[in-house]
Length: 629
Image 1 (cartoon, rainbow, N blue to C red):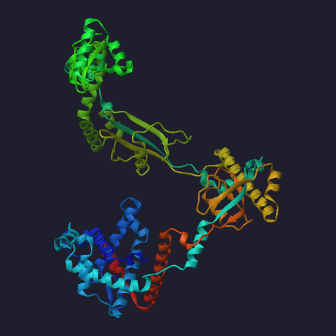
Image 2 (cartoon, rainbow, N blue to C red; image 1 turned 45 degrees about the vertical axis):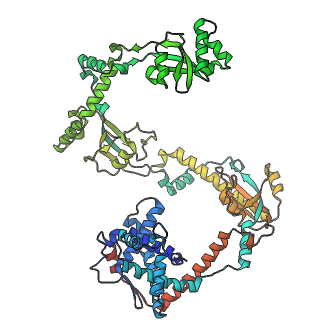
């Protein structure tokens, strides 16, 4: 509880104070004024008072920290369930008793020391690392705090720190304690174990009707039928109101001409290239090819280029990466070789290996696609008109079915569905648009009442209505006899196996050797070496490792297996202390953590004693007033 009091540097405490005020900006108010109009203080310790605004600031700070921990904004009701109000009170009481002790001891802080602590805080320094008054005032203005208020609170924290340092500063941990920690952390163990499965207790005799009924009556809630709801829904998306038949031949023809490129495949050419070291080499190769002395491929071979090295790719004209190559390639006949081209990466020759002519799909072939696309475009344009028409019809008293019929929308009925999306037979109901959200809302809705539509993607809606409710009920044994019998067998098998494991454990505790027991059961003894405290073993699990460290050498324990309905009988056979274990072998932060813990314990004891020494009065009405702002 008191760790927040133990900052060693003025910087840390000032940051804590500023962080508290930043988060509580709304409490101070956009104009920088503190809460006023509440005459009572929240708590009193002797002559020390904690005002309403101080409680609210501390509360908002803790609420923000709790929200960060859970990754979501915590509501006031949730905070109350966490006991946040009382936690904040406890923190303020701890600070107030220290303040009262400081007052009685007549502790104070000189103005020079207060100025030094303020100047040391990096938040108030400029780019050259010096205290900057303008920066000081800017930071405080950002959190809505006056300089005098800051200095008063800074002085109060520094005075408290004098008491904290007197109690806990320089706290060290005895070497004997750290040596014991090193032995504890470094110990490893060897465990032997047997893995027992259901075959040891099978076959399991079926229960009598009376036994099964008695067991069912005790566990009836596990087999209860959940609540089911019947509902109607209407989906409104562009495809639900699109009418391709309404698109005329003239509209199709106009669209085709306007978007002709969409139905065309541009001419494509497969291009090969040879890049030369310089233009002179390229010109010489071009002359040899032109004269018939050599072919394109022969030139490539002479230069040590393979076929794969030559191929640039197959492109439409606008897709060729180099405009110079595009211009040359699309001027050649198939198989033709260009003159020297000044490409982006040097002088080169190109050859067109293949030409795929431009192709255009005829209008008759694409008319259906055009009608579908135009109908969807039109449907998207008028979708909100249809939405408004449906809502107007409902507002005028029409039922869901009547309103849907007026807009030519299809109504889908779901006879019965559980909150989990399954029907009474356990089958998944056909996909409901925005199914999870629709079901959640439907199970909160009143039957036969209009509900707000649920958004579907960026341009759709689902309207729904609950038409019937089948309440949850306990099933009769005859309805679920097979399920009940299967579950009884599973649990009975686990019970019998646990009993058998306990019997084996008792034999081992009585002195029987695990190898002897294993031989009788015709199974092997498993061994785990080098188990370390806190580990998570693949076979034993974290629980099994913890069990191995909870019993002495030759101790025996039974645990559940990681692999289904199995039992493990485990016995520790060896314990090894770490060699040369001492406090010096521990990481530095371990000793610091224990030292901090001991210091915190002393502070807790001090605060507890001071609380018994001073009269502490809490004003719950003022607390509620503070939380109402």
